[in-house]
Every structure is written in structure tokens, then in C-alpha cells.
Image 1 (tube, rainbow, N blue to C red):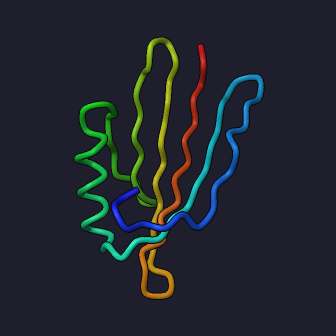
Image 2: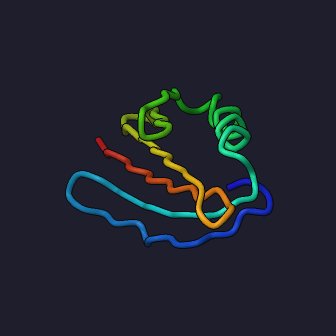
Length: 91
């Protein structure tokens, strides 16, 4: 989350037989373009990034586990509202 962002909601991590999943949303005064560029830079060394029609998708292998972070965003009440979903598929 960029400096000055405000958490709007979050979930406790949910662990089932094959995945660990966590979600959160936050608001920022940043533009979508600024946020996307910042996030790509922040995650570039650890994740492989891709642009999807719905937003951004970052993936990586961490040890033998596969992890993904999906980011969607849009304007809401004059702010950028960002939703992040992290999923780990343990080996």
C-alpha cells in the first residue's frame, strides 16, 4: 500500500487443503497510472508481472510454492480503490 493509503477492508488469511488466500482493499489519492507504475516497480524483483483486462497479476515461485497477487482498481468517491488478492499454492 502506498504512503497515505487507508485500509478499507481486509480478511484473515484462509487456509484450506490446497491454498492460502488473503484479500484486502484500500483507498489512495494516487492516480491509477501512478499506483500501477509504483506497484510494478515494488514487485519487479520478486514477481513476474502481467497486465490483464481486469487489472494486474503478479506471480512467482517461492521455494516449491506458487504464489499469485491479483490487483484490481477503480475510482470511488474521488479516490482510487484498490483490491488485492494473494493466493499461495503450497507444494
